[in-house]
Amino acid sequence: MHRLRNLRDKLHGSSGKSPNQSDGTTNHSRERTPPPGCPPTPENSLMMQAFEWYVPADKKHWQRLASALGHLKAIGVDLMWIPPGCKASSPEGNGYDIYDLYDLGEFDQKGSRSTKWGSKEDLMRLVVKAEEVGVGLCWDAVLNHKAAADYTEKCQAVEVDPKDRTKEISEPKQIEGWLGFNFSGRNNAYSSMKYHWYHFSGTDYNAADHKNAIYKLKGHGKDWSTSVEPELGNYDYLMFADVDYTQPDVKDDVKRWVEWIGRETRIKGMRLDAIKHYSSDFLKELVLHMDRTVGRDWFLVGEVRSAVHFALL
Image 1 (cartoon, one colour):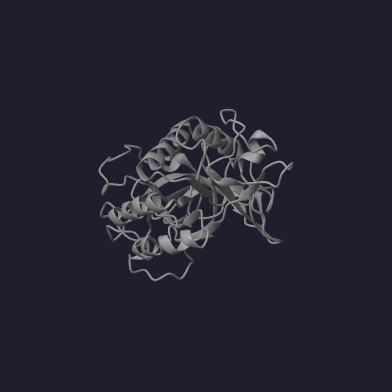
Image 2 (cartoon, helix red, strand yellow):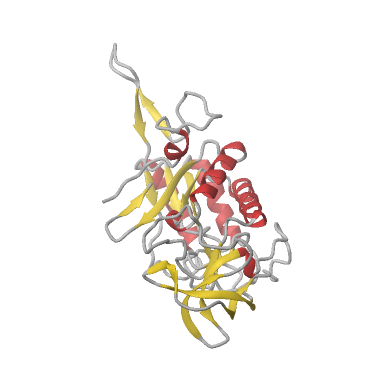
């Protein structure tokens, strides 16, 4: 089953309007001229997914999309869902294995300056071309986790049952997790935030004994998020280093990133990856922050996967 709904409907009521929006249509709907005596009927806009998993890792995808934009606009595409263009764990990474939110193919990190999709310069040429032809870009935002840490850090953790993450199956112990991110190749450009073990709630590997397991990190007030899907007891943990949105500096950094990428790339929407795995309380904060800053008219889509269906909400 596939469902597509403006995420703001969940946050602001069925009208889908933020508190700051007028009663007019957004940039992503149009009105047809109605027959005499009939009220205007909004015309749905068309969003196209402009990538798939097996696109070649040739760093030319931004170029391909730029060359196709004119044709796509001519056949009715209004909004183009582009891949997660932040630096991944390797040059071949699709971006769901995200390393650095603030590197859009600009810095030499994780084996390459460009991402799989291309350089930041190619991305900005795509942005300019999209504005010329009138197609909005919808950014795929991966905010649940981080991958390919720069170094290990020691911390306390317990193993949990993979089939019920509320059940601890070991005593607390010290582990050595890949949880330190200093983004040295970026050298504090755009953000000086560094990530340490306490910015995460879980991980899946202990370098001290080379064991794979789901580890819940221990610390003052630290636990899985309570505002996630209850599947598997608590589905906060999905993969890699699981971001902890109870940490104020983490929330501030991601909010700053939203403002930065909105101004940097002039996107018209976001597809929010894996939203059932991180705090819905923070997600509400984030959407309201978008509405107050750079994204009042953005089209927002959230991805939810389950064993029963795949949905975009």
